[in-house]
Length: 112
Image (cartoon, rainbow, N blue to C red; front, side, top):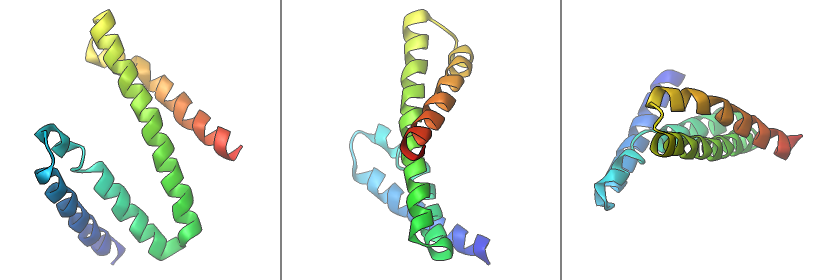
């Protein structure tokens, strides 16, 4: 039953974000609002119903820190590709370690 509810809530939130993406310009923003935010919100809504607010607060903070670490990863990948002419695979592979260190470092800095 939980999977059915997750499917319904997730679908509703995806539709809501898709509608938001339709009104935003430029259209390149549409991809930003397609999947990740809607899945995150659906997951947090279901977690709230099952585990409560304290659990959801920890999960939401972890998602935000992961997003910051991913932004650093993305910036580094872009720089390696544009400035050093690395292939996308090499740049992403090399930057993965930075993403892990940043994500876990931020988490430890806030809770440790």
